[in-house]
Image (tube, rainbow, N blue to C red; front, side, top):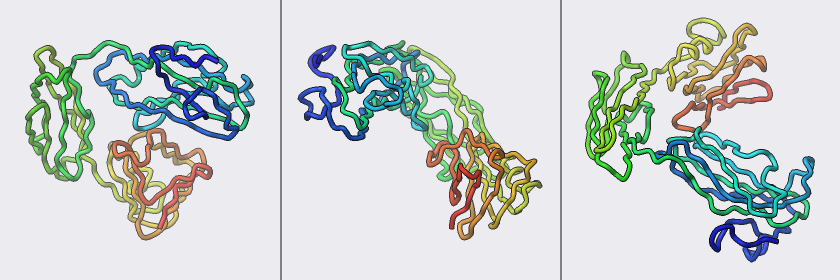
Length: 325
């Protein structure tokens, strides 16, 4: 068994011998995760490289225990970056390279995952070494956020991160009349109280200048409106399907009725934009759908920058959006 690091004297590995070796012999289901946050804000065309080895159980598709996997968590979901059972059946160090262009400019979590099954497996267990991120160093200033939801409180601050902490000059453009800005020390604060006539989406431009680079970055500001559902019907201007269709991203849809709304078979509802859906707080509400009449592709629960549902739950098996007391 090869227990030597690929580079240097240390490497990460799964062990059931308190780290004395890469042996494992637990014969019970187990999951181990090695996580590391990586900042790709200044890396163009990032590539993850590392060396790995792992034997695991016999290479049988129907015996899926004892294998390593790789995921990247972007804050919304875990993205699988490896094939099922990919990191197994290999006793010598092997190099892996994965292009991370889809995460360029983000801060993400790198997760190496080890699954152990019921069987007694073979060593070495999943081992990794010489983990690196390579790419082109980007010296263009980067915003801490490119999207703002301008709701209470009515002040938001955006920071400008620069390469090697260079001084940066910020010049805003397309600022709405109800908003004022304050610029200092590489940050811009946006303050204002929008009125009902100001519910809209605003595309602001920030001109960023450092001693070495100049760029213009868009900043999108959403001022959400509130739409009230007063009808138990599935059609009409004040019905849920119509209000959902009219809503802008991050708007609020509040149910002011309780009872059961039966969605007509010719009405299709597709939740493909981030909105806040709030059910009644003191009564139950049931929206009865045919299974294929409700889809949601951009909905992330409990994420402040995406859609949220309050006092309602989704039952995937029955296609019912059900209110809770």
